[in-house]
Image (cartoon, rainbow, N blue to C red; front, side, top):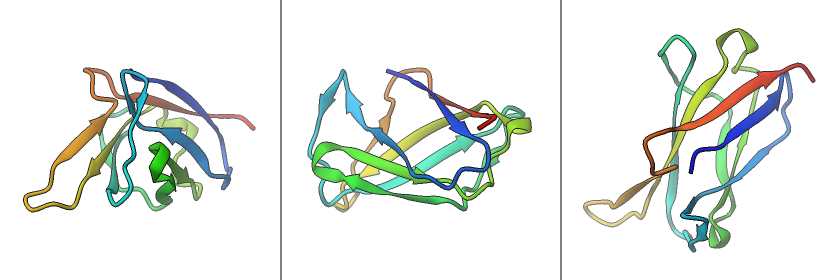
Length: 108
């Protein structure tokens, strides 16, 4: 299920999320993360902040912003992809429904 998340403008504090399917937590240890981010003009954003596992065993991951995302281009549509590292890799999208998550950059 897609969520709406609010990130204070200019923060460099990690934003923690959980990748679940139908609210079920899955152990994603050994998996790799990637994000697809699109701004409010429909342009893909190549993130310069840090994306990492907070606790893969609980499917919890984080994004640490570096000031790249701006209020002027929010809201952003975000989808995280998790790959299992097999060959060929099996990849799952979160959220896995039609709608991506929405990130708003807001006044602190």
